[in-house]
Image (cartoon, rainbow over all chains, first blue to last red; front, side, top):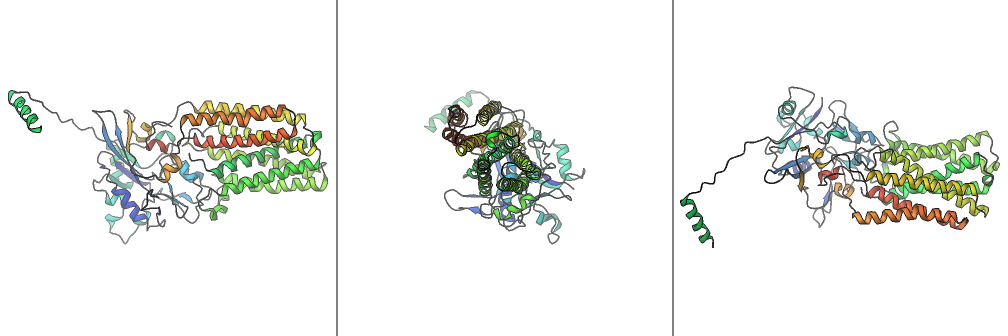
Length: 229
Length: 309
């Protein structure tokens, strides 16, 4: 099994719901609290496992705003695990989830240096590294109804732009989406082979606009100008 | 990259200590006349011991959760940081046995103590190499991910070690030795050349861009919003930015302090000035290590709006 997420950049509206749901679930989840430093003060700081950034792609008038949520990519070739000196970082054989054993981490930051996606953040209170667990404490929880055994970010996404599934199964929803929508890995040149895949925005037909010039419209424009003054 | 002071002190001090002990063992074993003196050898050995131990203690200061530091010996097969920790500890018994041999037998060591000294010298270089590979193995930082990084660490460690060795010998014996002085001069030149090659090499734009980072490779990409109004761990750790003209001034100061001034002071044939040269070089190497971090740009910066690293 190779569990991971597909993020649809076409439909993501950048509401930060996934990040908030993630923080809410994981602060009482398997990796202990996700603490904050000075949360209500002038310069709040804290560990989040999910960040949403917004980009402008291409130049005006063809530009497009793209929201890009990023969490751990659960890379096939996870350098964060290789560099870890204590063995706290590990990648699970059975489903490919990369986790940090909070009891072993010594907070040397080296794994966060090795991660190109900024997926790891140091907990300012505990001094240990925190990262996305793919909600390992939800997805296998048999007390939850079957359709809720998904990561918190996927459950909460209002536009369904996050999909969770098994990339090893060619018939899973995620594999199909990646095939049909030409899913992309981020920074493939570094060779980390990230599992999470991003679906690029679709090419939509441009709505044509007409500017009909007639005597009636010209008069209307004049009237509008006069009234506006 | 944010330059953590404890790491700067650690890499410079332990580098000088490892360089000092390696060169001292080589000079002693090869029978350099002025080093066949147990008080010089013991002074040099104790200085190396203090520098290395001080550096290693300083390195634990940057750990956020040091109570688990003992676990860092456990991933020898994959992690360079773990290898460094293992070799750094393994080095001590050999160094102490070598120094004990000098203390008990004088400079004419028997085969066993000679072997201890040789192994200590080899382990010193291996440890320094492992330290440099922690940085050189990171594909995320193109300024570090190069064979030039271990070259720099080894050359600069040997350089500062050679200056310290010449100074210790000069002060203990009261008279500067020509061979050690020439070795130090040669290593200062070697160090400055490797540093200049490194500075030249990192100036060339290459590697990932904001396009490959976001996957939009056919258009320009600009950051509109990083998603949070105050700083995060990522901004603090990787977003460290210094003005370009300040970096240039510091580069000039570093080259002057670490290479030019020690070279000139060494030429003046005085033991006291050689000690000053060694101290200046170590100060210059602290600036050099600071620049090594401040000029390194992690690819996470691309997600925060940098167009290239």
